[in-house]
Structures are given as C-alpha cells and as structure tokens.
Image (cartoon, rainbow, N blue to C red; front, side, top):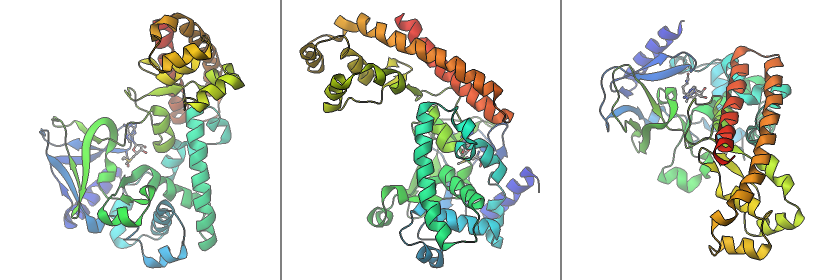
Length: 376
Ligand SMILES: C[S@@+](CC[C@H](N)C(=O)[O-])C[C@H]1O[C@@H](n2cnc3c(N)ncnc32)[C@H](O)[C@@H]1O
C-alpha cells in the first residue's frame, strides 16, 4: 500500500471510530515523515482534532496477561511490549494505525540509539549524555521484558520502544496521578501521533472523553500544523526524537567540557557548595548566569566572588576579565568542531544521518561564533 493509500485507510478507520478531524488532513512531507496540514483557513482557538479515550493505548488498556507477566516494569516497557506483539501479529483493528507508523528502517536511520558507536561518538556531549541515560533505560526495560518474552527479538522490541519514546503524550488524569509515577502517565493515540513538533504549536488537552488539539494561532489552508513536544534544545530533540529544528529559540550548547577543567578543587568546592557546579550553557543570548558565576571564581578572590552572589559587586566590574577566559574556551571549542566536522564528512553512513550531524555541528558552531563576535 502506498503512503497516501495508508493515510486514506487511516482516515476511514478514524471516522468509523469517532475520531474528529476538523479542517486538517495527514500528509507525507519531505524530510519529516507524515505531518498534519490545514485543509482550510483555520482560526486561533479551534479544536482541530478529538481522539476518544477508548482508542488510547495506555497502562489501563493493555491486556492484563501482558501486564501481569511484566511485574515491576515501567509503563514505557509495557506499552512497547504490547506494541511489539501487535506489530508482529496485528489485530484487524490495529492495521490502519500500524500502516502509518514510520518503518523500522526509518527509526534505525533517525534515532541515535540505533546508530553504530562510531556515529554516536560524533554527537555533541549533551546528546551523548542524554543518549547514555536513554540507553540505560532501554537496557533495563529490555532485561526485564526479554526474561518474560524470550521469543521476542531485541531489534523488534527496540523499534517498538522507540515508537513509544517518540509518539506518546503525557496522560495525566486523577486516576493516573494517583496510581502511576509521572513518567508512567503516558498514552499513545492514533492520528494525534502524526503531529510534528514546533515550539509554537497547538495545545494538547485531555478530559475524561479524550484528547483535544486546539490551535493557538490562525493557519492558512495548506499550512502545516504542529504541537509542542516541550521547550527542547536541538541536542534533546535529536536524541529523543531523531530530528533537529532549523531555527530553535530553545537551543543551547553545553560548555562543561571547556569550563570544568579550568576550575581547580577549591573553585569546584566553592561552586558545588552553592549549587553552581556544571551545566554551563551557551544560548542565543550568550553564556548563562551559571557560566558567568563559574568564570568569576577565576578572576576574583572568594570574598569578592561572594559579594557578586549577594549582589554587592556589580557584574560589569569584572566582565572584561571573564570574557577573556570565556573567549579562549570558545575558541578551543571552535577548533575541536573543525575536527569533528571532518570526521562526520569521512564517516561511513547515509546522507540523512551525515546531514543531521553536519547541520547540528554547524548550529553549534554558529551559536559559539555569535558569542565570540559579541565579546571579542
Ligand atoms: C509524533 S511523531 C510525528 C509524526 C511523524 N512525522 C510520522 O511520520 O509519524 C514524532 C516524529 O516525527 C518527526 N518529527 C517531529 N517533528 C519534526 C520536525 N519539526 N521536523 C522533522 N521531523 C519531525 C520525528 O521523527 C519524530 O520522532
């Protein structure tokens, strides 16, 4: 079946199952799988999609035979197991939804968790940190699931696990709030899972009847409509969702690798004691307050530094000295980026992955260069 035919089948199934699409239509979009387009001019505040509760895949809707075999598992692990079983042996009613999921090959290309180690090593430090946490989560889930389902293949399970990772919505209800941990309050929902992300996307709300997606601004016919997955940097979006935004107001770069080595034991303990150790970020507005505070330990005596923290010493007084240290660190970062970019060019991988890595490093370089230009 072609992608267009799959969408048509999904829409018929959606209509038979009381999913309401109001002025929208899923379509295949270059470079981002399927997305949702406006089929007419839409006003701000219109409900454009409603998905009834009985269609959600949640902890409560998972067959009890699965749940009872996975005692102690996360809801992510449970939903992934149920999804993996259904993907391999789809019930009739699941077929139209299954047909619009990205393929296993798509997920393996897009998601860094599936990449070979040589490529994972070419991610930014922030992405690598997030990835190692994600990997630990996956391995823990898989260790438990593979014991209860010895015939399930790791590759199939990882595919389902990543579908859950990239497509679920927070599902906070009085009931889930009472019985589940925050990370376990998740739901997979048909059609709504076809919305791509934008920081200024539509709002998502839940009531007893189901999920509703509502526009926050007008959209013209043919325009893509988005939802907001969260205020995320591109390193986060890449690791957790397998894509980066061209322009992202929430983007930032971590400078820990370049700032931490400058701080000896004494400075570390000064910073640690006051909650300022690590997470030195550079955003569109330059280096964050934490970075500024950390670098001030290098140009001030402790008593002067404490005065800055207490607001008794103006931040401008030492800014030139702080900027000089920051500049040196940023210039080193820029040199290192040239080396990584060359490795990305030489890496044996397909165009999609190479371009994503290349674009990400270019964005990081641009962010750093903007600050260098500002303070040099
Ligand atoms: C909830 S799904 C959205 C629908 C998805 N495009 C599809 O074809 O099924 C999330 C996935 O869509 C893709 N995606 C979401 N927002 C995107 C964007 N702004 N640009 C590119 N890809 C995006 C990523 O692959 C992400 O993991």
